[in-house]
Length: 624
Image 1 (cartoon, one colour):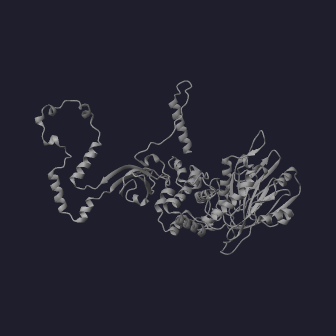
Image 2 (cartoon, rainbow, N blue to C red):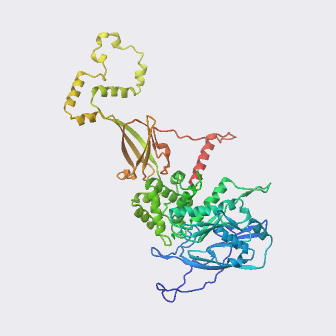
Image 3 (cartoon, rainbow, N blue to C red):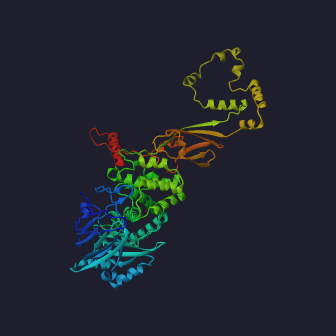
């Protein structure tokens, strides 16, 4: 049935029983950098050699699990794999000058490696930096001549859900052992000379860095090897083995190789990401064909944590709340909880948004210690099992003891975005009832009002009362702010009827600020504030998301402070992915930007018309 085949048994297979069957098949190897895909070959025209990355090359057992029964969704490209665990022993026969990397451990090194290569491999297990098993000089020598002889490499892998391999006479091979805490892991990289100097410096180091950090946030890596292969596939994961693409550039004039900052960090990031898939979904075995985000989103979240542990100011692409705002406010979205083949804006939806959601949970909603505990619990509870989204959500709540329904609903089941607006700030103080104080206060407030235009223009007019002094009386000599004996007597009468506690309340000098907020984006989130006081000090206030429980659209918050507030900033550290920061300030703040000026050429193409066209283009690009 298209990409799937069913075998009907003569009788039902009971629990604990087994059956054996043989399948004959053939596999056409495509040219990967021409046709694309998750595997294939690369041809090197300069030396006439090939590099093969072999994946999805044999029939694999379809998944059957409690939640869904048989997995019957066809492979259409985007939705990746839903596979079962198994034990593999694979014999791969290749030209004798080829080096092979594969899922699992090599069973016959004495038959395929030289004595010196075997000794180097043994040294690598306890080395403090990568050891070359096959050096660049040896690889270049292999490239020069072919051979009609063959060697058979045998690999064994237990409890894995797939098997992939790579083969080439161009491979340089380096390795370094790593103490995993529970077992030893051999990190290995295979790459052609075209990958250096970038690959020999960063590939194996990136593998070890990934395992160190993913172990910290999930569980100890359970397999004996972890491999990164450079070839035509930009980034793809299989158990114990990953395909990663970035290479240095070659200066056409001098022939010298160099790499840009983007290429360097692109390589480190893609290795972290693909090795990270060894955990999700190669061990925590989610249904990729249905829920892309359960492997890509969770893995991108951990990738972000590992990247930030590499160096200060690591240029992470996804994870920070501020990096997802453009997508969150864009049109043509689907909720995260959408089938893999139906997603719009695939990278942002399945990678960026869920990774950002988890980082916000960790940093802003739950807190690092508690969220890390809950995420580890999910990882350990569901390793070598098949979790559904509900299993993930319930485990986070169960392990953290925090009700996260409101957050999960908004971030995973809707396309709402965060846009909390500070609409108005009212300052209230206690009315002391003392006429000496209150009338002075009223005069000061009223004097802040602008004069009417009529009063301003009548200032030079000669008034009647100035011409006839006898018309002046008490009310001309005193204004409405004058305190009278009647006012004083009324105040004294009031005080006589109050006890000491009530009198003290009238002397309260605190400032009462009523802040009005509106939820313009629809996504409920905590309200985070920085209060800047007149004396130059600052206070950070965190209002839980529960403030929206009675009204998800408009809320007010009363703040009582001794000091006068000069400025209020909403989400001052850009924690919540607020898509419009222009409404986050009181008093309102102008948002700085730039306008490009263009030289007018000819015709009716005015500067503003061209500016508007560029705005339209930028908007479309941002949406894409």
